[in-house]
Figure (cartoon, rainbow, N blue to C red):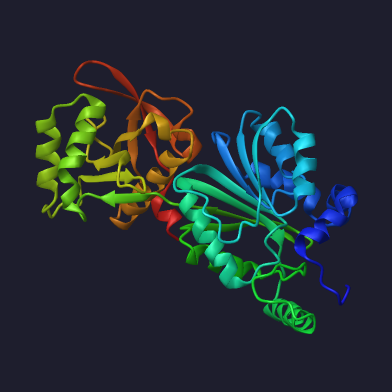
Length: 374
């Protein structure tokens, strides 16, 4: 490692011609990591923010899975952005030549974001600030995938940050100017910083060599109407409009549940960052079906069409399963006409039930909720 630090842009521009070969063949974990990162993104996304996109190595496997994806790429090196543009002439890519530090990425703009081997030059405060801007830019339920060089121990991290500070002092490099030096953090510190920025679900999913991949999700707000009774009228209007059931029925049910000693029914709303309702569901004793020997039932699950295929239904189901377990229920049931949808979330088909109209519905049972809590 040289004792002379190079400006970040100059460092990568001077290594442009050998960059792809170096990353793919000599940085352990990168070749496989690009594929793992791509597979960590939901298939239903339509737009993606790529921080430090470089020559676009991470985009190749992403475009294989989602060819029509719109990508906004940000990078400090104009030369690397030029090489990326040459690779993907037929793709919908908007390239921004800039540092992403302090950049406003917008609000509720992107389905997902990714960064690969780009952030291990930043300190903790810079990362948290960046993650907060990134968090704001994602839609509720949005995914951020970070693949980066991460160290195993705090002592390794401390030594690298100290050496960077020493070299910057020797060269009289002012604060706020970016020169190339690797200051990777531990996996635990990365997870802590992402949570501090607001991400509610952060998981380390893969590692090879020094390359690790962390997946963070911006959880939408899920409101229990019992806990927030001011949402009662909005809940009544939402459910009655989606299922063509009398407003009076939902009003009578939800309003009278608020002060009940019985744990059921429970009603939930999912909202975006502007408090618009984007989905909802409930738990009731029986969903107007002949199988009254079992219960309780997950009911009225609905996600607004423009918010579908983004994993939001799964998040709502997960919250309801967790609350049902806390109330002492070992299983939930549901009746539906869908096939293959609830199976994705661990539910199993157990037979048919009949409604008063004579119509037949498929009956599903959830996985064992009490086992999930252990």
